[in-house]
Length: 433
Image 1 (cartoon, rainbow, N blue to C red):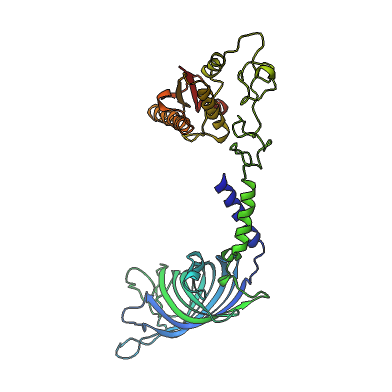
Image 2: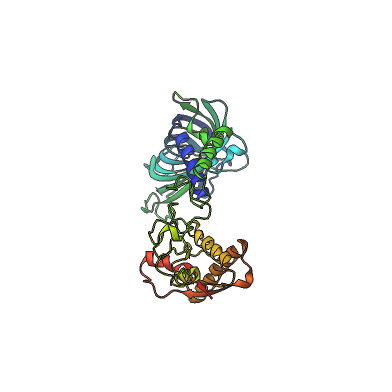
């Protein structure tokens, strides 16, 4: 219960802080750098490993610190490798336009713990493109249109609250690309024997870009979503102390009956009183004498005879023996637990007081479990429950020679389908010997 309240209080503080978070969401991006067409290329045509000739522009919107969306457009040129490559010359101008999803990988992986000015964005999306061939030998071949998929990563370094430096490496796959990147051959998986004959095969093409650029952040707030840190990361010591202090006040148990004050309807009961789950003193026979003062707690009687009937000779052992053996006194447990529930520990106190007043009486402690679970496991669990109550009685000052315990496994007398009945089965009972 205490752990649960602490967690709830902290969640409340975090929720309150997050409800006030404000950051900029829009940014403009400009990048330039290299490209490289990997294939297909016409046999004998080569491109440089790093061909300077790419530029792109983008607009990005972040939904939160972690995810967003952007649209961008890119332009560039493919041409032949120079030097001793002996590649025929070619010149292909291209353009592309894409819509992409964004993930702030740096924030997802807590890069701010390493450097608050470093993050990495991942992106993936789809779009379309066009290539224009300036030196194609295929008659009437000038443009090639295709769709594409793009993915990549963009490390960013924060220069100021308005500007970040960024790098990017992206891989683009063109779908239904009709011609090679140089435009001098059809993009087909087999040789074309008839010149200028379109085989109507539209395979894929793969190329990549590597760029450097800048992100410009727009908006009225001090921080952009890329760099925003939720305030709960910086919760102050005083704020935490205040929350914990409130919880401690709630958990006070002024009368020591096992029921915290905020749940206790009777917060001033005597320490040895039997109480229910709401902290109210029990009077089992409703005769006006509470059980902890009643020598006959299950048979009505006036307070002048300590709660026992006047017309009969008072024999505490006989009355309590009947009440105990008839299972009016039980200790209850949560599901799959051998720790007694707080409100039922008063039964142990009652038995302890009874044994102290009657030193010739011995008690057998009998553990039970409900029918859920395996038979062997339930037998072991019932034994643990009996042993836990045995230990409580020993700790209260009762000599172990007057105590015995045994687990009886499942209580098959209750309705297995009823959750309330199963609660009654998870118990320890007593037998006067």
